[in-house]
Image (cartoon, rainbow, N blue to C red; front, side, top):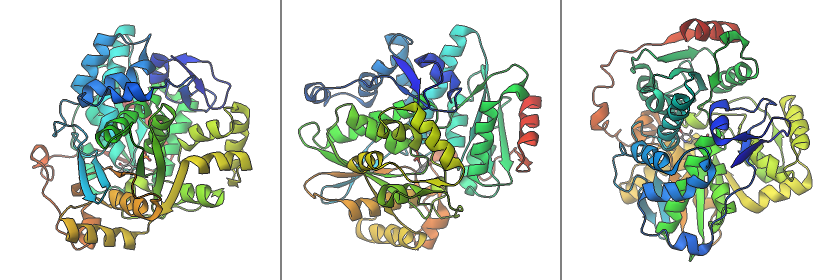
Length: 461
Ligand SMILES: *Cc1c(COP(=O)(O)O)cnc(C)c1O
């Protein structure tokens, strides 16, 4: 399988090269040149598979030619071995024909474990084969950081540097990162917001000279392998409620557009998906684009769902590439325009996006009401991101005979502020995190300044 850049100028690469490169050298993102397609018969024949076996079926076409079958199976089995539910991604029913897909059963209690448990192993595998090392540099709005650290900490070919916005992640989120004391793990609190962290990472990838010859690797969802791993649970969830014999809809709490983009790919690969609902908090650029063709930057709001406090959704570029007929030149021009303020999409592109996505926006007040209401009715406690997903699902659901599945992206224990505001009791930490608040922390606080951050990375790697 070959991969091409959304801006049309970078070289075509194989899976292994894309895995290590992250961002394309023309500033674009890599996407598969051709998507694999599965027939209804293929999908029907998968109904008895374990999550791991299904993961192999869905993902193998993307790595074929680069990773041998036996090695890929082994990495998949290892990646999902530490999840605390046999089904890996279990479903819970919250209403008539309405479901929540629990994606928080991994070691760091957010859906990012699905991709990063596999990504760390894939990188270690390819680097070992090539006898190379890599400096991982990532930005986190809270959950990517801990999942990346957990996924990469055991590799002696990776050094991991994670930037998080100082005092803007929850204490549980921060401690999940900063209490990992390993020689190859470095946490940096940047005195800025998530977009500041993300743009430092982007700038560092564009010009890596500060690293004196070492190479950077990406764990953000600009890395194709993350998207790939997230396609799997759309298949597992849909099959469990009757696909391919009936269509299914999904609602996805969205920040960087990675998770829901994986759902769009599942649809393109043959999964019968009726609706894909983009659920946003007050930081609603994606809702504004989809509803009003208004893709303009606004200032960032701090909300009770911090993992979605993002203004620039990197992965939206992957969708724009399809919406503009896979014309890299148009995407390049569009992104340049967007970077200088805002753009309106061509009618054809906007219609394409509208044919695949619905969208909805939920503010903090409503988020808390939904948490309280669902708990009162069912004793099921939602995290704030999932609450936004569920409320959006209910608002956008066209055909109640089609099962609606909301992706539960994190465990509520990670977001006590929202849970308390909703008037619910914070759940207890799971066993493996019982002593989280007593563990020793280690992190650097740095100014919102690219040179200082790069100097720290260069000196410590
Ligand atoms: C990262 C994250 C999101 C947003 O996912 P994207 O792939 O960036 O859209 C939503 N909820 C939680 C809990 C997250 O950690």
